[in-house]
Every structure is written in C-alpha cells, then in structure tokens.
Image 1 (cartoon, rainbow, N blue to C red):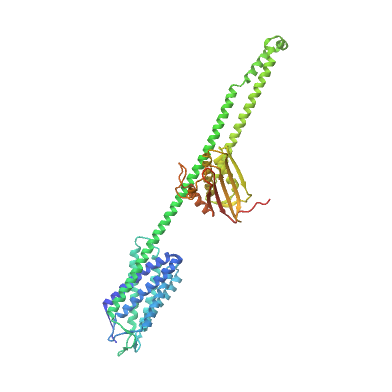
Image 2 (cartoon, rainbow, N blue to C red; image 1 turned 120 degrees about the vertical axis):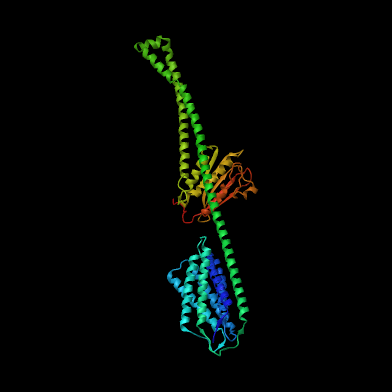
Length: 536
C-alpha cells in the first residue's frame, strides 16, 4: 500500500523535536545544578516533559503518515509508548547530569537511550490496529536503530558538555546543538517509518480513529506549550538559584569583611591597650628618673671630697688639727651629720631605683603578653587557656592597679583550636570589662576570671566585672551587628565575637543583675577530644 506524508505535519514534528532537544539541554544543566534533593524532582519533572515531547514528535510524525485507509490506534499501546518515552528521558537526564561521563558510560547510555527511542517508536507503530500486520525492511530498521544510538550518543555528550558552560555563547551553542539533535531524532523516526510496509487490502479494526490534522496540531501545540513552560520554569529557577548563590557569595564576602574589620579593630584595641599601658608605666618611670636626678643634684657626696681634702692638707700634724684647730674640732660632728644625710639619700635612691626596676619589669610583662597575642592566627593549634586568659588581662589591665583580679581556674590540658579567634574574643571581653570598670563610680573595682569544665566535655571561660552593668532592655541586643553602648564604639565587637564563638564550636552569652551591678560574659567551648584534667 502506497503511503504519503503531510509536509506541514512533518515540519511540525521536526520543530517539536528541536524544542525537545533544546529543553533537554537546559534540563540537564538544571538537574546537575539542583543538587541531590532538588535534582530528584527536576529529574522526575524533566523526564515527564521530555518524554511527552519526544512522544508527541513521534505521534505527530505517525499522523503525518497518510495511507488509503483511516488508521486506528490501540489506546493501551499508545500510552505504553508514552511511558517508554518518559522512562528513556529520565535515564538520559540522569546520565547527562552525572558528575563524570567517560566514554564507556557514554556509550552504554547511548545504547540504552537509543533502544528506548526505538522501543517507543515501534511500540507506537504496533498500536496501529491493522490487518495484516505491518512488516518492516530489515536494513532500514537497522539504520533507524543506528541513527537512534548515534543521535543518543551526540545528545548525551552535548548535554553533558554544555550544561555548565558559563560563556556568553552558550545559548547559541545550545541552539545549534538542538537543531542538530532535532534533525537526528526526526531522521531516526522517518527512517523507521520508511522501513514499514503495509500490504494491499489492509484494513483497521477497533481502537480509536482520529482526524490526523487536528489531532497532530493539538498534540504539537500542547507538547510545545508543556516544553515551553518547562523551559521557562527551568530558566527562572536557575535565575533564582543564581541570585541565591550571588546573595550567599555576597554574604560570605560581608562576613569576611566583617571578620577582617573585627580583626583589625581587635588588633587596634590590643595595640591601643599596650601603648596606653606602656605609656602610663613610662610616665611613672619618668617621674622616678626625675626624682633620682633631683636627689643626685642635691647630693652631699661632694662634701666628703672637701673633708678628705681638708684632712689631706693637715696630714702632717693631724692630731693638733683635730684638737686645736676650730675646723678640726667640728669635723667629727660634721662627719656624723653628713653620714646621716648620705644614708637618707641612699635609702631614697634605692626606693626610686626599685620603682624604676619595677616599671621596667611591668613593661616587660606587657610586651610578653602582647607577644603571646601576636602569635600566628588562623591555624589550629594547642592553646593553654589559662595562659591566654592571663595574657589578655595583662594587656588590658596592666595600668589599672586599683582593679583586683581574682582567678578561679580549674586545671585543664591544652585545647586544640584557632588561637587567633579565641584571642579576638577574649580581647573584646577584656576591653568591655576595662571600659565598665573605668566608668564605675563607687565601690571596689573587681575583675573575676573563671575557667572550668561544664557538662562533661564542654568548658566555660567567664569574664566578670563589678562595673557599670547592663540594663535588662539592652542585654537582648548586645550581639546585634552595629549595636553599641559606647560613644566611640563601632558596634561589631561582640557581634563578631559571637560569630567566632560559633566557629569554635561554642557560644557566647551575657548576663547582668542590672545597671551599676556589674556584668558577666561567658564563652562556652566544645572540645571533647582536646580537653582533659591534668593528672596530679
């Protein structure tokens, strides 16, 4: 039986094939980009849309096939061909969206996908209820199978290669690839159709009879609509994902900037504290040095030389000089008085020299504490919490002699963590405590430092002061970015400290009985493998 083709429907089937191919390229990129959870739903939805598109192209191509008798189709077998198309599309998307696609995997995927396309086509042809059955020319069938496998190989390779291409030519490349893939898919279909042979006198029975033209146009429009909707959704969702990634990247950049600003502010605070403390000590050192200079200028040591010269002049008759000469008779009393003055001067100089030595030692302590803070940061290392806590206190309270520092340390082994992050936190807590104590107007100024194990493997580092305290309505905002109670505060010290505490696997909290009643900041650290009690 001689068959002809409706050229308009053939053209529509090729357009649908190209739209399917372009959608497949976009979906492969979207499935790969969506991750495990989201990618699963995109794989299911994409397989349904692609499968419907491929099946629509195939069915439109069958409706374009015109013979002398009206063709009738088995609904069950037609639906089966649609299911095969959906499953094959899902397999193709899974292959193209995989992290790696070697030649062996690509070849296997092409064979399976080609077999699925052929299965869809020939099961769809089997849906035609015709007697006698359709026969096929073997060589053309083999050619259709070869085209299907080759087209699948090219489609999978192009989908894999173009899915992550971020160049400005990617859309053009996908468009060209879609044209080639669409022509290949259409070529397979019409080669398979050319292999079919209908016997003269054949007739159809049962099944459903359709108006080929209207049905083909309807299926084509629905398929293109579904594919367009899928494509728009994929593009829009990818745009949202891109925006979300840009926002995440911007958020990370801001966090890095905040961390850098916090580090610089912390370093500035440490440097300011060191310079301030050293400056105060140098002032005291200067006062002591001035007193020593003043006492030396007023010293009566020169009188000893004059007495020695006088005795030397009268050495020939020293006895007569001491008994008969008025100057000699007054000399013993004068020497006694001079000795007392020199002894007083010596004691005063010793006091001032001891003060100078103390001031120099004070400066040495401050510098040593600063050097402890200046060790390299950003590296996980063993840290002695007690030593670090003492160093932080020395830097910030070296010049505040009226502050009574009390320590309550439980013996702990070194903790393995990022030293620099912990220094930033402790430096900020000490700076706040210093400010609170300087503003304290009455009562003894006290600073309490605590270090102990809590809840098994966690530890607690506390800095408690007797300063100006914190009002209840302020406590809840202390760790907000930009919030500060200081006139010259920058508002991210405690905020960044809270972030750093989380990065160390712990947390930071504050408490206060109220204004004028002091405050307590507690750093919680979780380091189960690094902390152990020291053995006696």
